[in-house]
Image (cartoon, rainbow, N blue to C red):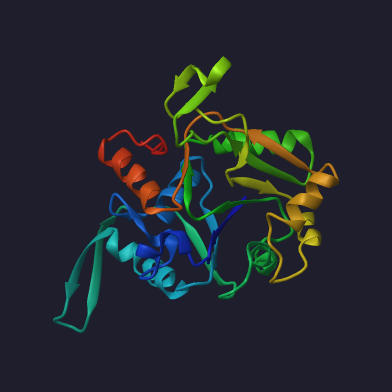
Amino acid sequence: MKVVILAGGFGTRISEESHLRPKPMIEIGGRPILWHIMKIYSHFGFNDFIICLGYKGYYIKEYFAHYFLHESDITFDFRNGNHQIIHNHKAEPWRVTLVDTGLNTMTGGRVKRIQPYIDNKTFMLTYGDGVGDINIKKLVSFHMNHGKLATVTSTQPSGRFGALKFGNDNHVKSFQEKPEGDGGWINAGFFVMEPEIFNYIEGDSTVLEKGPLENLARDGQLVAYRHRRFWQPMDTLRDKRILEDLWGSGNAPWKIWE
């Protein structure tokens, strides 16, 4: 099953970093967050990726063009031309298709543009800026069992502020620092989709999270896989620091491959 990753947006909410490189290439622990996402899928045996490029897409092409070389021990022998000897390598068994889906294309439009690469089969889709300790095999099994067109992984994010409950006369009845969500379940990406979802996407200006997902829900074709463990996006510098701190501590919850 192929894994599609949206990696073409401008990343304006983390412009301090994204003005130099596309958001999925911002590094956590010396590796692009895109690499971390791919490692999650690869851990469960899914190694065939389609990456939707847009803003500074050449940066991602350059990264993968040299990935095998950078992950290898190599001898360059210049005595008879430039002869390369690979001694061993640590590169993953990935197949990566990089597709230019347009600079200003919306999320739905990017998905529509990769339709020729899907081979009319079930595929997975996620954003290039969020990680979690999601069991991908259980997610796929859940999707196959319910028989609908699309599954979205949903999570309850941790609260950012202390929560107060009031009694009479404005007395604080209880206080909880940064509670585990406010009861709302949000879109965490990590979709599984049937090829029929392309019928819900009109073109480049289509925002996946609006018309297509709204209409799938209206038609009873969208089901949520509830993930109750770790999930963290990288929307802002604050989010990046959270991920960096977790990685640096040696206790990154999404590092399920070791």
